Length: 417
Image 1 (spheres, rainbow, N blue to C red):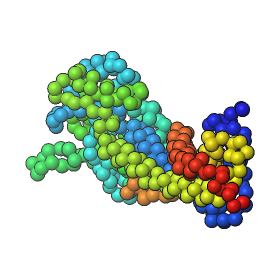
Image 2: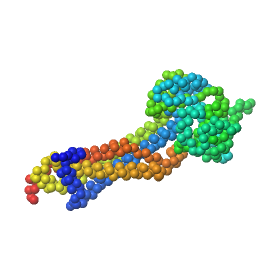
Image 3: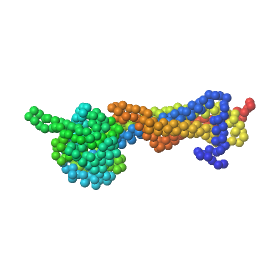
Image 4: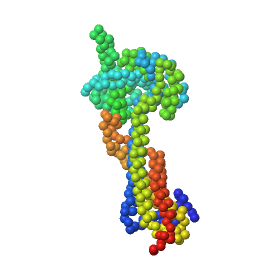
């Protein structure tokens, strides 16, 4: 006899589908069966949506953080005058495996004085044309041009985050004053220094804290503002693939010397990444309980069906049906319930995730969550293991009623018929 997928014959599938579609004397069995299908669908849908949110937050934060921070950063272990030998270290670091480029950077806290108000900012100096910063910054440009940083029309150029530009009232090509706390030393104490800049670009990453605080200019301009020599306080490495950042950081430790340390982006954002991993595990466990409830409903439904169909089972056995066929009939019923629920759940889960992600249905307070909306990024791999797990749980729930059906004795069931 030709077997169908999962090892069922056409006869077993036919009887299982007839039992599921037939009108029963006990309406409660039909209701429990329907609840079982809806329970499996609800569990699959909820888990797909929850995992899509978790993946969306992780992917969005990763893209945003890597767009503003380095894959690997070489920093001073103790506060000092800066990395003076950065020109010697960069060629050595670029020869490391997986390192695509290395570039120095210098940053410090300043205040920006605009038409509306003054606002704190982190002024970061980058090397024009360096792939470490240039590509990510170019991708996030909202207005203006990166090339304008090098073309000075009387004033040095600066690129502001979109939220920073809004809070200070800055627009493209407007003039902004950078106030450095590390100004001139006078007989009356330290006096802030004022440096005029021209806004040549506005970028937006979607990450609130970065867009609210960061400003970019050339490294020479930052050295002038901070009144330092040709030093850097960080050497940033671009790594591919990015999951090799930890390995690169360990290799860089042997090059940079005892006064410097190398940290990867995963170490710098360990708390956020650990929180997302923990949230994912808790989500799978809690929402997985819905699948257990659905499996219990399948168990109850099939046990009641065995009780209702015991005469039919006796007739099938007396007509030559083998007991392993009877067992597979009820296994097939549970499998059909599980597959139906999984299909419905996957369609609803991926459909809601798609439209919620593109329509940005759920808005967030940027100042609290750093993002303006809940990102949904469903992955097909999640659908495979969620659907497979739901079908497996549904199949396990049928083992007891299927075994009970094979124990029915035809002579006892038909004695008084």
